[in-house]
Image (cartoon, rainbow, N blue to C red; front, side, top):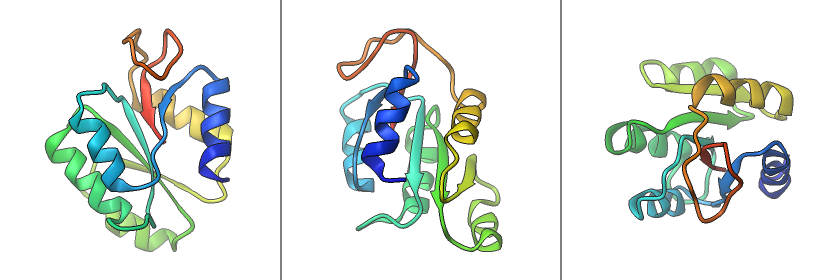
Length: 125
């Protein structure tokens, strides 16, 4: 599922999003102080890879929960995320499973965010 399509579906379900297309953009958003509950991260990003982003967020933004999306070999992904606070979903992404994991991973908050709807936390997608 393309990033823009996924963002549209998550918005429809009430999530406030800060869509980005690279790890560097995600880190820039976080460094601006925008409150983010969940980062939906592709493993194979242009520039910095998704697992490197997850590791940086664990150190610098520990309240952000990560959900890694990838078509990579499942045993490889399990090895990569071992010891990290990242969930993993294989591609193609099942929206129902993603929503279930997001509900388990991140708090739902009423935090005001410039890009969003009330009563849900923000997500970087």
